[in-house]
Image (cartoon, rainbow, N blue to C red):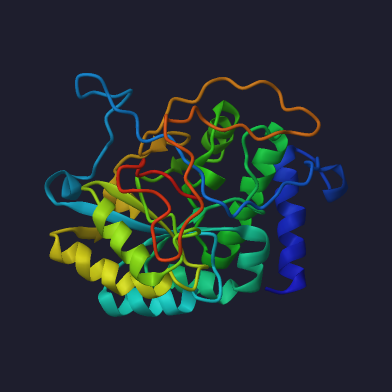
Length: 308
């Protein structure tokens, strides 16, 4: 991306996110660590009596077919073109949650290609900070900057976002709602930042797949992309129909979670040096240091664990 486009995005979006008229007026959050480690995330809400806080609005197709959605986070990156080649050969459309500042600026042509091939593009923030605990203006800024640059590159404004590490609260929910973004979480993952062999990534996705699944993978990892052909073959052999997130659900509402993990609770105003909070953790033992070639967690661990 040219320096001019980057500058125009910053000038346009900081004002829309904060109400400021110039870049110099924009609030700046304390530096945040771009975390690569996986977290144990609570599993989906298990409803009492078979009914949760709301029913997931599966599309007519996915109320009858055995649907599953592949999603890829943190790109575009050096392996995204290879992934797009694979998806094109297989006739599969996926959902990509893109980080704005470095990945999108480094690979603008790949952003355009993702859109041109019919994949869905979602917002994964500007710099991938943990959003919980950040001031509301900074949460809005993180999402608004990415919204603007993705719309400039593709002509389409995203309607989906994924909070980094899947961490959300009432403030993040409010920002997503204000910007017209549904929050897309996940319920299947190979925890591929820790499980670093292609065969293990393939095996874990196929073992943990479920109807209505939203699979979390990362196209910035060199061992994950080569696993995708085997994942697609295995899912199809098991009777799955591969869809995008908008094909999986219908009438998604801004701010709402898909799938549901927990109901956001009101959060206190952020401190000047915010400390990210996390949702209430399930009673899952802390994973031991992984052994090469072995999964980080057993198949009985929460299916929603992962980096995001």
